[in-house]
Image (tube, rainbow over all chains, first blue to last red; front, side):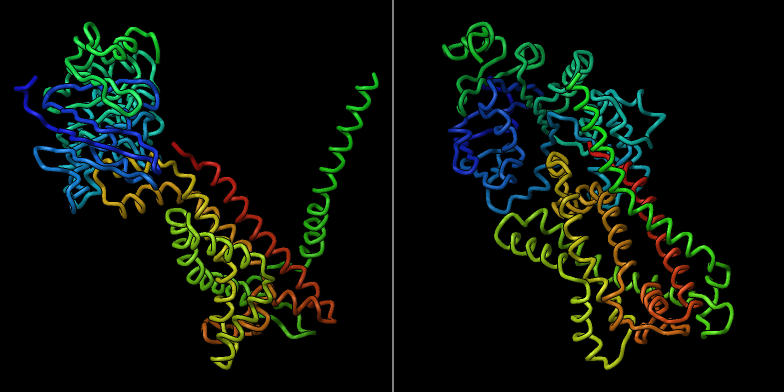
Length: 255
Length: 275
């Protein structure tokens, strides 16, 4: 664990919503080519934590942050850090599938590339195809790329959102409860996808579902009331937790 | 048994009230149709107004004038209304937003003739003549609050998740506002715009002493311009039955145009969807 390459590192990270503390003194690492799960009961700050890794938290009116997060050893909270560049390097998929309702499947997948500047059409085509293949959606949509993105099923929409994120070629992917609105079959597909994606990306996944964390994650952090209670190899968190609160949570005694 | 009677009575009362509410609409439409259809012919759409006693004559110049006036109104009202609405939706939660929102509500409840006087003082008095610019300006002012509030509502209806999804893709904020949030809201905003157009098409009061009227062809916007509503008004208050018949025909045409615009928009706006 100490020798793994660190992709992102949170140092004494605190966050507030209108003065109410949501995260206190979080210190946690995200490793390259590993899946890191963030678990904990509702309202424990796990979403707030990942939303600070791409600085989306502070876009909410009244939300504030203190502390540091390093991406490749550069503090993303330092003054005049380029947020557009940060969010291209750290992509995010949300809980509810969010395809852009006015755009077709193709336009959705291309949104991040096309809206960022002029890119020749063949390059966009190639990027869209690659991203949709990576997201295991290509075979299902290759004949209807011009249909509206919101016409797809929930699971397909979510994979479209993953494709949209991958098309920008990020380095880290944040998944904020990506399966909580999906049925078990779609969930299975996305979990398989996560296994594939970690060959190329560092992945952080927020999940309510402890089995899911156990299935997909190499590392797991347990959050409670805005604190990181325990962070370790997933197997250890679920079989030999050091903290009593972690044990109570993973064995279902509360939460 | 008693309960069933009560229920029936209540249902009957509700149905009767509903019918009573629709009745005036049907009566007005029916009356306008019956009175207007007789004076409608091809001449009406192609010719200039004819003097009393001369047969034929139409409202062609007034129809064109109405469209030009509405066009000028859009140039004035749409940019202010749409950008104002976007601002209100995204940054208007504070005190300044409250003041602007309140002003828009007051403006939309002002009698339209007052706005006509405003345009008269501001433009007609300075240019020293009636003009299409003044008329279009007055109509544009009437459009502003309607468009502002619809735009605000529609932009607010776009879920925040879409805004965040755009930011998370690494798009600059202005692109997210314009190409994702505004584009998603556009269908709804368009509906509001068309309804505002339908409303100002039917305005007479703000035009009487701004665009004034003319019996001749005029496409110059710094000159007085005919409009269907003012022409209908002039014909309707005239003592000549020939002109009064033209007023009915004009009313029928105007009602038909506005009804069509509204119907098309209602049909179109049903296709608005949000993720």
